[in-house]
Length: 150
Ligand code: FES
Image (cartoon, rainbow, N blue to C red; front, side, top):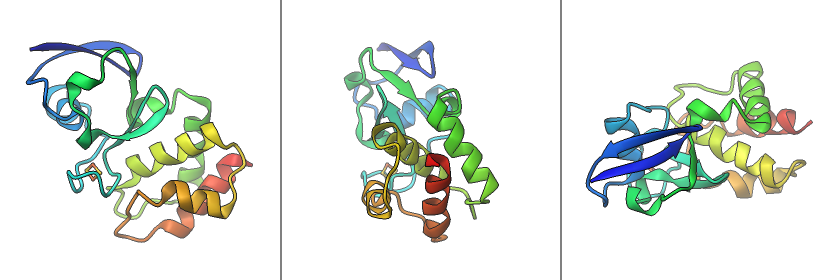
């Protein structure tokens, strides 16, 4: 079934089973590989993208449920003011270690700043608790979010 999607400002068509999770459509059908597969069950946050500005787990969203909503991935978040600030802070503070979870971390961090421009440490910890990092870069993630909000 041909499904139209609005991704990073472009309308793209994917010919897929409507039950396919968005993550697979992004990565395997459309070649948008920034969102990562970590757990596949909504627990790790590596696959986080924005749907109309809200963070979602793309491994848990059937592509048929997306409709006309705007999908933003790590490939497109730098075109938004907070996405640009977050990516700059991530780079300045060398947040990434292995890097695998970082697209999801950046998407969650940007969504946080979009809803809360001056988050406290507790706000950051609450907003980022669904994004797991095996390298434990959490201290740098918090510092980068603080810098991006400064
Ligand atoms: Fe989607 Fe882990 S891959 S939450």
